[in-house]
Length: 133
Image 1 (cartoon, rainbow, N blue to C red):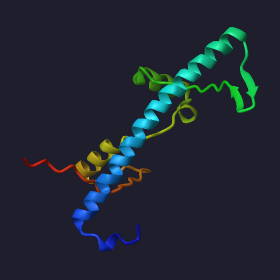
Image 2 (image 1 turned 135 degrees about the horizontal axis):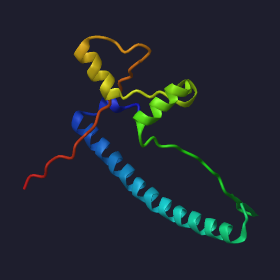
Image 3 (image 1 turned 180 degrees about the vertical axis):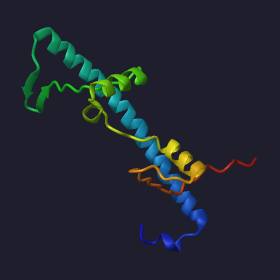
């Protein structure tokens, strides 16, 4: 793709549309394959639950359970209050700023949010042309 400079804008748009269509096709295939993997996962978990196993070695690899834990904050005010009261917030909270809020705040006030660094990525997109009858 080093010869892109030799293409005009219409050719670039056509090329971009072709690759976007190919990606969409690939994503649909991946979606279908992920659904099959989900079914296999449910089947293996059902069998493990029945037998009490947590791993089975096979010639094609070892099926084993992996446990991941996540926590969702359903009452932020109560959680923040409790963490402050116990002085645990430094250990318990991972700070992720809302980029839309930071951008709006900085634009409205002209003040930078201390300790925050904003990254902006610009890309080119192409829309499908309207069909002319």
